[in-house]
Structure formats: structure tokens, C-alpha cells
Length: 88
Image 1 (cartoon, helix red, strand yellow):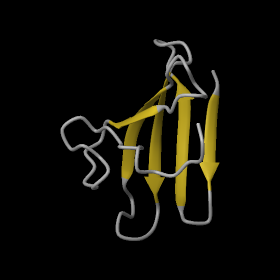
Image 2 (cartoon, helix red, strand yellow):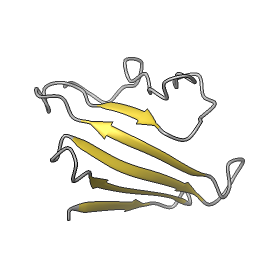
Image 3 (cartoon, one colour):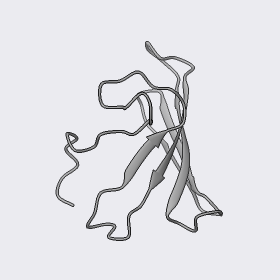
Image 4 (cartoon, rainbow, N blue to C red):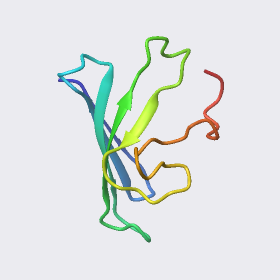
């Protein structure tokens, strides 16, 4: 099983692994926040890679309810159109 763990100095960890069910197209993950306003928050999400990836942007959906202006509260979809990740 492939999995990736990111940790940084912001007291934030991201764990992600591909879903066996979708064969590298869908990745399940969790963000763990250890400090600040959202201390002890665990935010579950999944990442969908489109057929045109990496030329096409992935889609990220939060399973956990997230109150953020870039996250659709009903669907959990993160609006990455306004995010600056460089050219895809």
C-alpha cells in the first residue's frame, strides 16, 4: 500500500494513501492540526485525480464538515480555481 506523510513546523500533519477501491484515482487522507484555533482538529478528505493529471487539476473533497470560504459546505468540495498552485 502506498501512503505519504507530510509534517511541517506549523504543527500540521497530512496523511494520505490511495484507495484500494479506485486504483490510484482516489486518495483518502486526513489533516491533523496540533496548534492554534483548530487545535486537535482531524479533517478527513479525499483527492480525485482526473484522467488528464498532471495537466488537469485534481479535485479535493472534505468528508469532515469544514467551515471555510473556499469549501462548499454541502459537498465538501475545495474550490481550487482561486488557489495559486502554478501552471497545470
